[in-house]
Picture 1 (cartoon, one colour):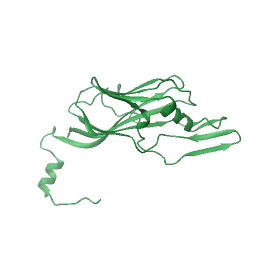
Picture 2: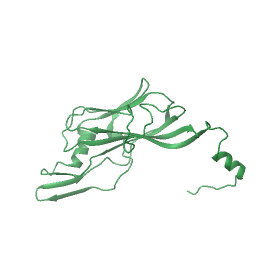
Picture 3: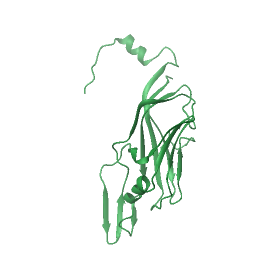
Picture 4: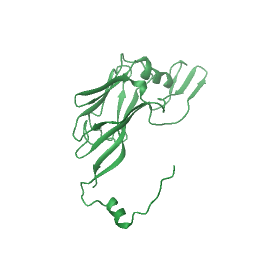
Amino acid sequence: MQARIRNRGFAAANAAAIPSSGRSPEAIWHCAYDTQTYVDPTTTTLDFFTTVNNDKTLSNMEAAGQFPSPQVFQLYNITCDVWTALGVSTDTAAAGNANDAFLLLFTGRPSWLFTLQNKNYGRYPLSTLHASGGPEGFVSSTVATSSQQFGRNMPHGGWSYNGCITIPAQTSFQFNIIWAAAQNLTANWLIRIGLFGQLDRAVK
């Protein structure tokens, strides 16, 4: 759908681009994300958004478990990405990446819990969260008795709060995944939780 363009005039355009106050708010679409490692075969709980990670390819949180002042976040969607560094080769055709993903999302009966201050949302099955994206398709190749597999979470469906939850500035929150039992995987996996929504912040 094509946006309708209208003439605002230079004064109105400059006022929108350069607010009179440095603390005037701007609203942007934002993804707050954090990544944790599922350690094979010992992990039963992972806690997200509780610490600041200096590696911004894994997490973009500015403060531990909160948005700094004067930021306010309106939560719309939650995503869950699961992956391992490389496709796993194994001498058992049933094992590998695809099987690991199934163990993480279903066999281990994982559930997720979002907590804002002392108020809980959940617990709900982890399979209700969809992936944020990724390569489309599934690849599995077999040479003799060795199997090479690639697997991930599905990129559709998922969970939406549709803006019903607002996280005020400097207000503690966290996200937890709980498995009924540790799963025996072929490798350690990375799990990334993304919180998508509207971020209101000061214009600097």
